[in-house]
Length: 107
Image 1 (tube, one colour):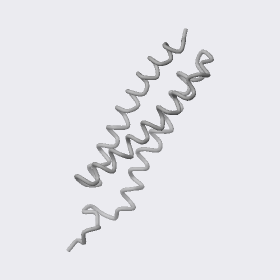
Image 2: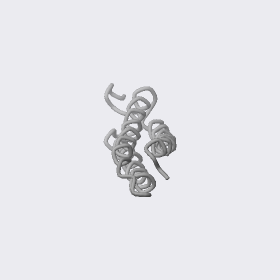
Image 3: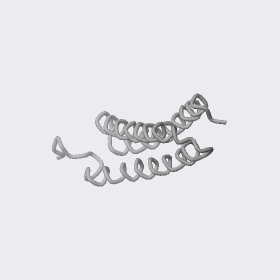
Image 4: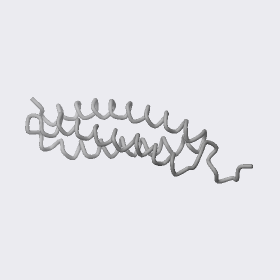
């Protein structure tokens, strides 16, 4: 019989590693892409802070979605929801950063 603190689908540390393998590479790749697109393209040094905040926001979104999905459903479900949240988060970050870059004077 399972105890109250055991994950239903395997050891919890393995699921944390899997979730980290979803969040960290997606966060790093998205950060590199948005940095190239908005912070260094056209000399927009003012966009560096916007890109940094966008990256931290998307990574935080992934962590929060993982925690909530894990708590409400299961670790396996959390992986799927986290991957979806990371993808949609980066799409939203790119759109917001693109709009902000024009407001800051992109050419």
